[in-house]
Image (cartoon, rainbow, N blue to C red; front, side, top):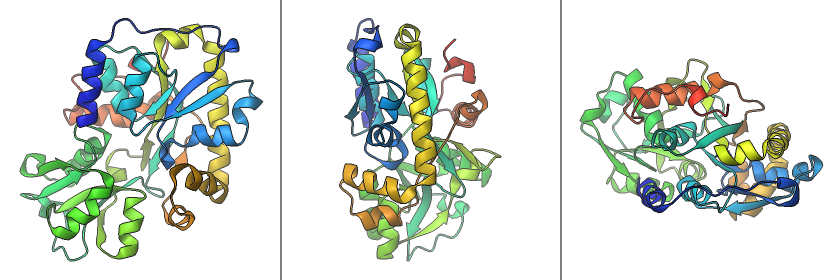
Length: 312
């Protein structure tokens, strides 16, 4: 939530968005955090996929998606990666962002998040959370959207819970101390805490978002101006990202080496994690789970269709 407020403050100060043309003579600047779900760009760079399609790409690391979105809005980067709902929130506020390529998937077989409690907690069901405090990494975000969908499917009144914002690294210690009763945890903090034995899984909420038991966790996006002026480069970028997706899906141990080097995580930590799987295409319907649930859960100001996020 703090990151989102910072983004909004930055965007309020911005004038017209800068544009860049003739990408044959410039380097595409691609912003991404150094975590598994956003790592396709780094895999593409490391394996020469950008070069293979005729692109020069500079990968620019960011701590979070909100910082990358602010950089894109100011013209400091050309392409970024975020959950569809975060992009929809920006579009609803008037920012000309468009989705160009599919990213990571959150699936039941390879979940990106887990609802966790301490290993000694008496909580057994979603209903036991009523009156309790639940931590998520960012309020009004895709994480809250997923948690809301799971609570609703479990018949829990969200208003009876207290939601608080904690970083991923703070969640397990907070569960151990009892300062929060449950947390929506992500990798690698989840696997580290499970190895320690300090937490247990209450639920995998993924299926609550989509009847297909998976949904698009992240997508790659740019500004409409940049897309209109650089369609050939965007097409090449998408091709390289899907090359990286197919490679990473087929070579988890090889991608783990790259991820460990990038994130400075110990290799055994990366190999123990539940690794991201990546989409190898993008259909408009892939955006629906986050959009539909985002509006239903009050996180989007209006109903939005996939076409609101896709270039025309």
